[in-house]
Length: 141
Image (tube, rainbow, N blue to C red; front, side, top):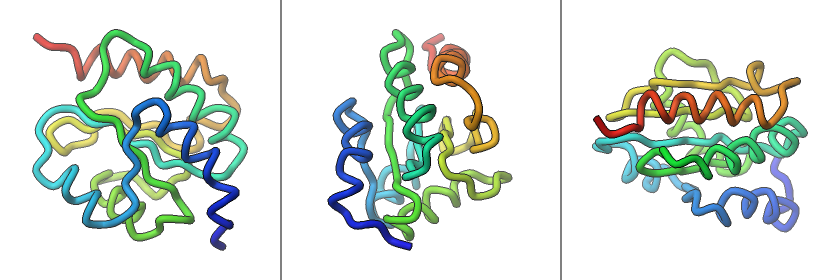
């Protein structure tokens, strides 16, 4: 079911105001990831409560960390369906999950938080997982 776009604007802006780039089409996803070198955060956004209460606030906290991915992007599950499916195609070995947060390095998933790892946890706990992954995979050597 598609929600009215007007309802989603605040949910989208919660990430885009942080500088997270929203990818709404297959072409935008492919342009960003097909040949991407370096690290990329991909947030599969959602209208669900655990996205609002846990995932989006955790991403906001994690992006304040000194070590960050080269790029931060988002797709919106249930709304930008084709873009979301394409983004998920880069998450080899993981089932579709909304919300979810992936960290890719040179196009491969090096860290993933699926819905079951987001639900029931605080935004602070999730942000700590993300910043630990940033430190491990995004830090310059």
